[in-house]
Length: 300
Image (cartoon, rainbow, N blue to C red; front, side, top):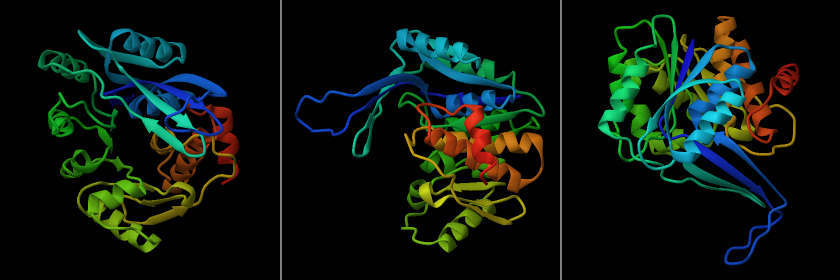
């Protein structure tokens, strides 16, 4: 089983318009609502690919109930802690000349509710995979990912961390099976501007040496680069298609890579499936469906 953890899931409200004019009335041409959150997106793709998965995390209020309903309608198993106050956040995604995102803060999580989550986390057992993905609310300690991995250190599980800054840097000592920084996150982590594949390779190798067993760097329209557990470098371009939205594409890559690793030990295959999943979501309104994923996989 692959478990995913999303501390701050959302309802993503996406609007499309030809042009966004600040300070004026803007009318959209199309709108749609989906659940959001990096871990939930990973579970959604895994479910599409027929890989057993369960989404853990938190939800609150009427928007939280809508998230749970949408997960159930999509056939995604979940076991979320329902918070006693507040509402799960609504994030606004604006698609005009450029993509603009407004991400809300999200509800607070109490100590008691965090303990409920840890109880649910005890269902993760030897042979499972745990994905820690995304940001955390201000009410939660910034070492929460370290706490989780420390609690599970006596179990033989694969761990995946898809996060930024200290959330990522401080868990490398736990030797996660996979991390997936994008170029911006890589630049922020190392405090330098990246202008070449050689730089990406060097920084990815540094993260591999620091503990991460596989380092997958998503590079937008420039494709991706993987430094695997054997320090072998793999490079792959992108699929052909029309980009609808970049939201969830990186999460889809994580899911595709894990799905590939569930089927085979071939890192090239896993990278191809990751690329197909990321591209399929980028070309879709919301998270990709398996038909498009497999169509793109055959391109690579």
